[in-house]
Image (cartoon, rainbow, N blue to C red):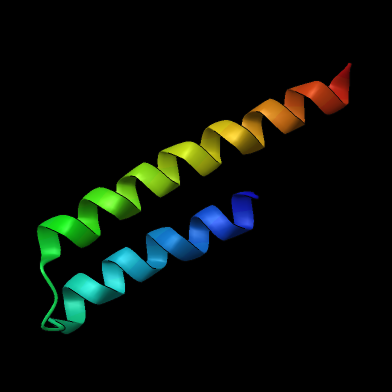
Length: 51
């Protein structure tokens, strides 16, 4: 899960750097939500696996 989170975060940065004709606020908002959600899920699975 954390690898997927890193890929999404990298995609956000590349999208903003390359100046694609996409609404940057929407992409940043959805990307940020995905990064936060996947990070929380990966931490949950990590701590659940330690039990």
